[in-house]
Length: 295
Image (tube, rainbow, N blue to C red; front, side, top):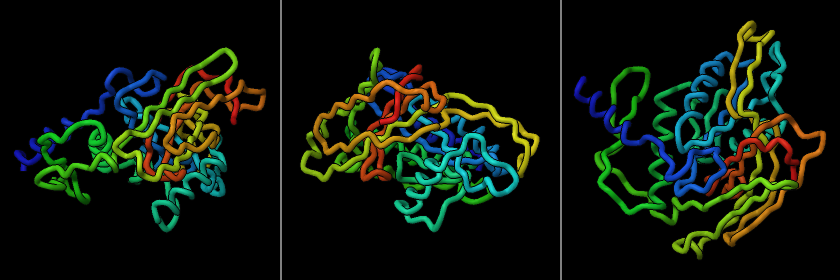
């Protein structure tokens, strides 16, 4: 068992998430797009405290763009979430439909739009991130000899291997598109590149999402299951805007300056997502963007 655990640790260590030239959130162009991780959470959910701590760890990983979405359906149980919005709740419900889930739950983590796991389970989160990293990179690099990824199944500490050898995802199913965001004196400029040549004849119909983000927030909870606890958040989404559709050709969108009604935020994330709530095709984030308005 000890030998098996050592092999598992070595396999997982291979999947440290790195960007080619800049960390996620820098606003700079990177060769590998960030893995987009969405965490659906609530101040009224006792399990969400651990999930928020997990989210803070994930947010520190290079090559990961983490977004926290506080939801509203726990508000009836003794405490109204001070960061939650109906926009966030609607987004999670749309995922439940797209992923064919019977309903919504917290804490939920959705990775790259296609895989959901309980957000407080470190083994499940690590596994989902590693798979997302391999899938993303398959669209950019030739196949290599890669050891199997290890995971824990169930409550025991037994480690099993997903496969004896890695099965490479074809580029036509794993490609990404560069997304750039630049700040200007009076607006925000979003540029989505052309679809890769290898998949030019495929069906591309993607939504360009713009998220306003508070990079950090701390809340003392005064009721419900977490009464008396102080909860810290990373990258809380305060506003969601659909700013356009991308069909595979180069596209530039200009987002105008904000008005006084803009929710509190200090960063902007842009995510290009197939069919609105499908696979993430491209993403980036720019900090110190407090004056930009919804589309």
